[in-house]
Image (cartoon, rainbow over all chains, first blue to last red; front, side, top):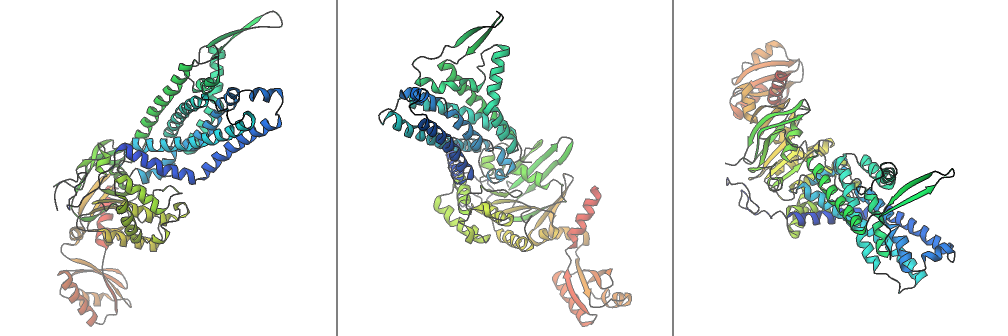
Length: 299
Length: 314
């Protein structure tokens, strides 16, 4: 028996050992199997059902109120149609997808003990993190595309087959950036908790209404621009459909019934600011999530 | 010679509790080493640090000369491990789980296919190869996990109480599998708190308690420590055996170094002369017509040393 330690190709008995794949290759491999796990799981069916219900309700409203002033406004131009229903609605799909596919992605590795299977293999923790992130991203994109297909079918019905605005491509790309930011945050919380339920609950509370509440409170009480809240960047998804962007800062003075006046300020992110907030959230939360995952122990 | 596995001052503290206290252990060669200790002794903590599932407070763990803490990917490249009872993604089949494991290790697809068939056969899971793991019992999952740890035919295999949670038949099968794993170029490092399991399959034993290594030696040396060169044998008789018969017809047989009464019908004899000595004593006992119904080498040497060392620690 040789005394040398095995290298990537040589072993003590002289046989060969296949070289362990590189980090990117391992991450893609893992994401493929994780994605397959998602596709076969009940959570995927649940996600598609949620999108189908949202799409179904929208389709019903469009059909039922077709011809009324409100719906006529929506179906007057493709920008108005997709700006409202895609730009203003896809974030709901993204939030649900983030919660369903990402909420327990890392916490579940600890709680369900699947991590013991993966982490015994020659693979870096960062690779596992990246692979699972890619799988959640892929599954979420499928949900987004499903929602888009429902809207496009409705768009063809009410606008005709030729009305497919290029702004939709741009908006889809921004929605992807928002998805990255949201998944980054979801993975961060999932890394911080070893319990899937806590991770899912925190993410659901924060993204469904927590951030909106915090944003409103900051604007009303502290009176500063809430540029550090991911929710604040969300309207940017609809910007490609707008011919004129909303003013960055609007101050509204309201006269009270007894002659007094109240001044309130409304903030809207600028286009670059919205993109920067999303990108910043993605980068910072990805680093933070990885930091926690690298340090968490399988006790 | 680069040790197959080595712990250098390996220490783990959880708050004020020291789970592992400066463990120094060096194991090399092709053999099966039992890592023995009572519950809470620090066995799983040690193995988890060898597989980077938890991190040492101090010290380092090496596999094939590579620090697990500094380069886990290279250290675990030729190591198969099974820590606790891992869960496999429930929607995957055993074949897919092995495919994932093999692909992440860099095995070629055809190699994965052929090895999967071999290892699933070894753990008797071939007929379940295409069923989803989510429907499996704990024992079946454990078999798939064992198969996954053997897939790449690794030189170092680390097993943490592999028969835990299995029924008696499953435990016996796992022991057979582990026995079958012994080969010229492989080290098996297996934790257990079941003495008979260690005696049954291991060549060497390391005893740990309260996070400290108490001894590491071959099983035969463990026996010699307590009994010199004698072998401990348990004798059972059909009817109670009197003191006169014990002293006159058992203790006087050449090769019997000492006799201790265990109960009315059972004696423990220390026999010198190795296997030949045992054969001669057995023949003399049979011809003495004392109603001998069993004559079995006692496995209590390890048990005695185990209890002796553990109680010293308490």
